[in-house]
Length: 507
Image (cartoon, rainbow, N blue to C red; front, side, top):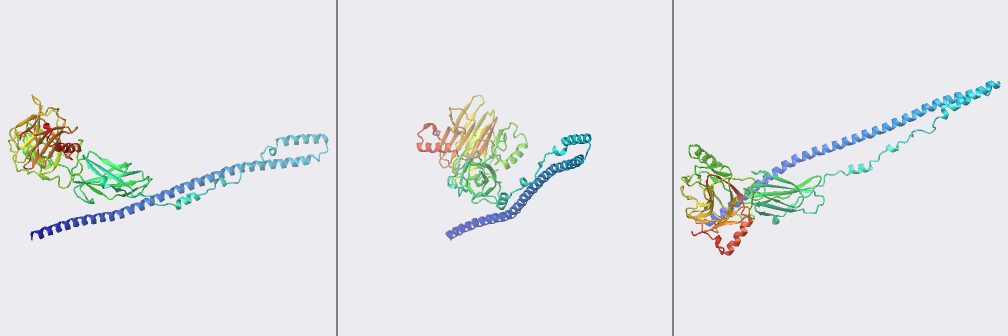
């Protein structure tokens, strides 16, 4: 009976997943169908606009060329008309002079004849007919203004829709998720020398499989990529997965998107559990600070309730991020620590815990002390830590402690024992916790130099723990285990404790 129930439950789970996939697919089809209608109307509108522009250009060209012909016609007509008028006047004058000369031949008186002959000679010398150019200043030829639009007609007859690049194909096997960076690699199904650049779009999501049309996050875009690969760096992995898609662009148009791919981007995300914090600690969005006025009124209780609701928002902006290749599913188990189920820390235990416990796997986060912080501790603790207990002074807490008050010290602490660390205190401290492997290591977050490592056997889940006095801490989560840290841990595990400086203190 039990085996049949388990089999039926598996079938139900499979059907439920398939139903969810179908719902998502139907939603995608509906979205595409609506998009076809909208986009078709848009391209028709664009086509009409382009043709209207083309018609306008042709009309302007026709008007300009017609005006040129009319101007040439007016110029030639003016030149020829002037010549015609001058020639007509010259002809009239020449005919009159010819008639006068003919009459002079009939004069009998010698003196009168000589006088007339001289007058005719003078008039001939000054006659317009002999001063005119007998060559037309213009011709009736207008062939220099003729046109041949055969090539243009061929171009117009060859009007076609723009050549659109084909959709790229993302090479999932070559994509990498490492050190809070994602490298995406793709290729074109056929070589296309006209491609000018690519556009990469990505989106964070908590849904595995094909991207959903409606998701909590919007697509973000990287434009003008010249090669067939791109690496997104400095990411905060505050979602389980990321969707990616690529499209190719030539000088004229952008092609279809590639088939989207989903890559796993799990990392340890947590915030401060303000319900656990000492009343002298003020928990902000991304930091915890010492507040000497805390607990002197009811305001602190109200603040505690408000901070409780926003404690998970511990994202730090402008921090250096790093991580490991995408972890396997199930390796990052997050179990929220009970809220309101424990007393606030009090007395001289200026402590606040993380709001998410570590049940298994390997996790990493970073802490930075605010300027002039006089004393602080960073580490992990069991969830049942007493409200008066201080980090490093019980057998259920492991930490490194920094003291800048009166006498400077830097030490690893556990079970009320301290080991002095003979090295400078880094600006940011990276914390690596391998619950299954029984290892808690602290690193210089910048150089990845090992500061100290505890080796023990954790008997129950742990939570990140912090102590602050006269100062503050800022927190960075959503980070993968840095590849440098992971490589170092593998090497150290292979040495099996041969380096005594990394061995834990007596438990």
